[in-house]
Length: 317
Image (cartoon, rainbow, N blue to C red; front, side, top):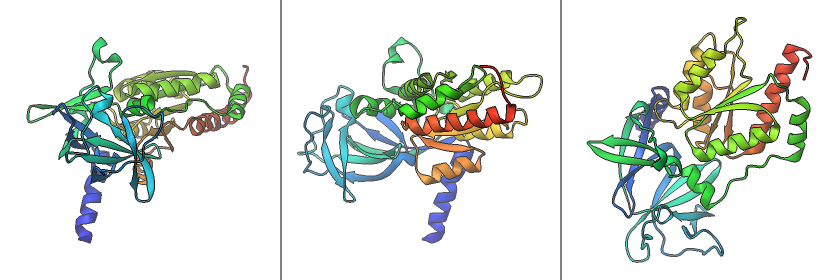
């Protein structure tokens, strides 16, 4: 039993280093397949029949359920997407208990399906005006069947709400030290996450570039190196879950490149459990900040600006 456990841990660790994703597929009321990274799933349970109602909450929040002695939201993903609500009182349904950025949420689904492993290069980012405001962040295929991957961060932002305001003392601190030479690069495929990143950096008054794919970010970083071998970017934030190239692979490639390895990399992910933080550090990440914690993000930026300023000496504003 112990050897089997260690083998499973090792398998999942290798996935993080080989640009692969293990996902659980599941069905919603439309009987289409959807996929979710297993790293986000704590447990799968049958939907309880008794819920604690939450007054004035979003219609997709059916109430709260007890999970290990703590109340968590039960969110009907299908209802949020415009489908008929799951009739959990009269039919068997299931809850995916997931961790997102230090919070625990329950997602009501019709039926879990199977686990599959895909390379991130097989995960296709949809393009076009139709997808601009949608919650669809990627599509992949298994045996010819499409699997849709949702921007769960966007879902949570619209249902639960996300704080995008940094503390006043951090705003004042940043205004006193931010200079025009500082530039932040962020890479994330989630529209909600990009919105928060921009909001935080705008409040700090620091110039920034945000892209939605890791290969684009690597190209920008390569072009940013000047004749002295230094990059114009003070800091890079990276998500972990991204089509084409995941954040683990992006971090490894960046840190293995002698021209880029000096750049400070902070992983900014909703995969906020300790094991993912340790994997990121093993691959060269300098820091790890859970998504949707604007003060933590601001503190990292301030620390790196101060460090950069000390090493560079006094400069004009």
